[in-house]
Length: 141
Length: 357
Image (cartoon, rainbow over all chains, first blue to last red; front, side):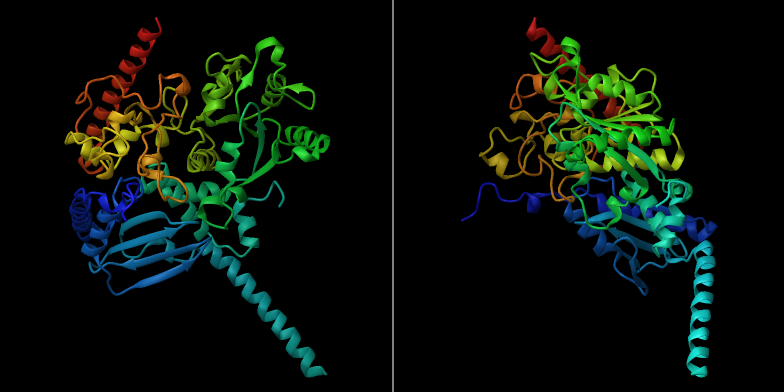
């Protein structure tokens, strides 16, 4: 029996958003190829239906690179089948928190920050000192 | 954590890299519709900021606003804001601490003079000297005035604090007023809604922390990023409206097909909020998606607007063209539709006034 109050999800229309966003992506990708200027399309504020999102995912597909980040929750980054066109998706408590198309060499979130590298160098030196100390102690005994 | 530490230093001690700020920055930029180029500035601003002292006053309210803001408890991007603020006083959460809580409020005010943010949920009764609501023997009005004296800014959370809400509904027995009537010249942000969307609160506080100033507000003091467009502008059912396909009841063919709920009283065309895009319960749904019209809860006097199931009086077709492609088509169309919606809202309110007469 079908409830009259059944979810309306399957009734959501395909609004044409996916095609419009692909055209915008093409324009930005062409510009990036010519000038090297990166850009981003934020899908978050667009009233896209689930069918729109599925259509967009299908059109862009997946390419050679993918990565998963564990930074205050999970994030996924993958290059689409079009070089230079990346998807960056940050997951929140119960769903997608941020959904971006980045047209760039490599999304910024994948790169390490030099200030973090500075801290990391200090931590690595401390780890070595500890290991060295422990090793010496072990050797002496 | 020490108050003089930067947020970057604090997260670094916990082994969290600056990617966290970048990720949070892109989340805030996304929910506030800021340009993607602002992400790095947001991230750097937050990393350099100190933990923000917040004093949360609860007056004539139902605790729904606090529930909305604190409901999320997993260590995720949405609630990283709780690492960025120091909630030095929250009346409802600290109620059992009694006088110790009141002392904490006074200490926080003294230690962060001129720098703390006051968050208020609930309206303030002022009739008969404000006797209808008091905390620790102090009337809400008096406590608000005392706490605001050395505050940096005020955030009115929820429709009760923003516009008086349900306590102010006819016949308003306690003389409830909005916080805006009592703040004097202090910078004020209204985050209306019954309850308000938690992301709107997170966005406003993060913007304050990153840039040290209040985000752009609408004519009712609400952040334009969340209250710049109507529910109708962003509703996924809007294409049905444009095609003249409506539900005439909650159990007819139109309702089952997911048609527009305009004729069954939806207040989406006159209600400014972000429910249609932010949604509720972790993005699961919002009232219209669940088959019920918008009640208009983020607008002033929503409780006294003539009935939730009464259709708006303005003739259909008075609105601007479909916004389905607005994001792509450009800002001009969006502004046109917003102006049209504002006219629609005025017509609606005028008709109610006329009816009262």
